[in-house]
Image (cartoon, rainbow, N blue to C red; front, top):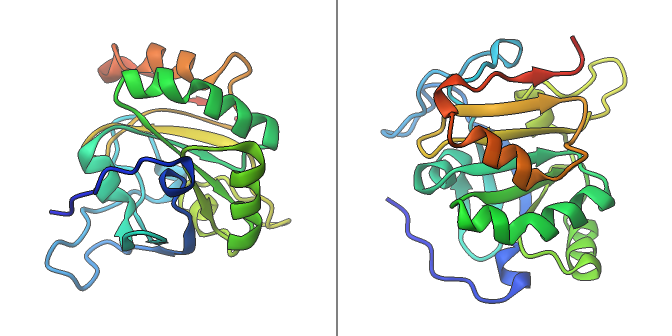
Length: 193
């Protein structure tokens, strides 16, 4: 079991990934991930895809380890306006025990500049190879571009709610508040279909 030291400054809280790696089902460690559905089979109640990442203060970590401790709101391909909205909603998410994390298909240095310029206090992952969008089925195979999406992952790793193709216009705190009380009956929204 991994333990986090309390982080006190936004720059430390915004621990960046340097590299993302998918974690295949049953991969070599004794604590291998449970079977993860194919991206096109993602559904509410299914386990979220797992991936390894390099955290600046903690070294190699697994996404499922974050989800084992608390619910996680994973936002993929947000615009800068979306990042600002996520920062604005961070306190409301914290009250509900939800940790926000965002993934951008950029290099590490670009994300550090964004964290500093926007004064972000949450994890902003660098995923220059687009691993996470593939795992969550939000990468266009023809263009290689990632579409915006959000995934609310329960403590324990199951998907509570998600939407692909758009981020919430009325804020992230609102979709989290709507999803958490009725987690068992939440229906996923997919604007692509």
